[in-house]
Length: 389
Image (cartoon, rainbow, N blue to C red; front, side, top):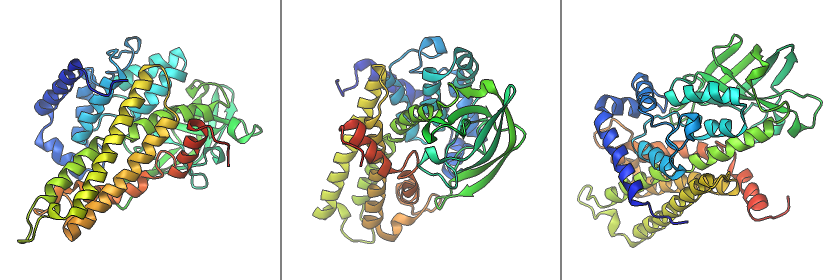
């Protein structure tokens, strides 16, 4: 593949930038900076605007209402919005919609996909449980058949977005007598369904995630994606797409560029940090790794354009991105000292507070979307052909 953007793709990127320059207000920027990564009223309004303008389905096939562009162009779109922390439906668009196109029935596609494209329908992930984190086969939430419905009981934890999403993509055990990996099914249903309770959990960075309790929640059998017992495969496909788009390089490039600018500044009359050869060496190392991640992002997008689902590549991208974010944040704190810990709102904050925010957020990214230790197993077995340990 050619890692360079074509002239048409460069013009497309400039078109996106022009659209954002025209429509992203200072009020929206302030809401984004103070919202704790949850879209506020202006963020939700902007999501609908993106839907109305046809931006959300840039890389979707035309038969599902998309523009039929390449996944490279879809990736360019995501990256430009990420630079400004714009909410665009994220996992709903980047992961779950892709899995629906691949695995859902035609009736389900016709129901869900147009509403996703309009910005009306947004989905959160109901995977993790108190006793089953990265081991999805260990979940205990039950979905038992009762006529034309399933009755769901259980609990999910760290369900990011459950406080603003309209629907949940839930993994539950529907075949209790089947082997662990073969007894699971995926359901999509509204969070407003009776019996669903959402309670907040806040991370140290201020991001809200949630507990979700399910007490005799009745959903139609038609809410199941795929066939009974196929949920582990369904979730695995969605997770491959999720890791591809979790591992984006754009914010890391932005934060690194901001750190380099700060390193050129003279503070309190002392020499700028960039004059220190050790600092320069560390910055160069970070630059090389950000560039490696950029190329891996483009390779994954190219694979999707070829009709393939990145698997070991998605895991490699996720590991590199999450651990690089931690390294970059650690270097920022080390180089800038106490000043690097200032957050948005301080008149002396460096890099608009992005480095401090990243430093608090990065530990969560190493297990969000699947713990990095498990990703390394996937890379070894599916990418390198090594035997199971």
